[in-house]
Length: 178
Image (cartoon, rainbow, N blue to C red):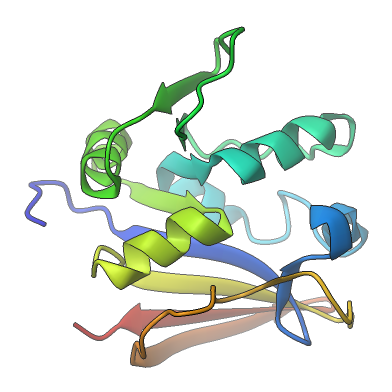
């Protein structure tokens, strides 16, 4: 994908030590026991837009009372079923993944496009649209839930380039080898 922007497409994941990005029933409240938007403020500052899957959007809405105020710029939700009642803070997209990434990346300008959601991230990785993967590893074992990588994802080679610890949270960053 060619784009004049200097921002990157970054899969952003919070993960338990045993490899889950959400617990049973797609619970994610365990994240806020360890992280706030102030944990790694440089990530939020580098983000210009977010592309989110519908499932992640719905989980986020349920958790809105616990939301820590993460401001990742313009929000785009890729879905086959836009909601009946629009959300004024979100643009719902019903296009294919390449068009969704191009649209959200344009909105991000010179900043990064953050990809959230297991299915959307898997589609982006499968199609070679991702430049980096950023993983926050939290000191918890969930035992079950939504795995980091969806079943059927082909091998993707990564190059580690950064790891930082803040309290009990370790942030790992990888370039995706293309």
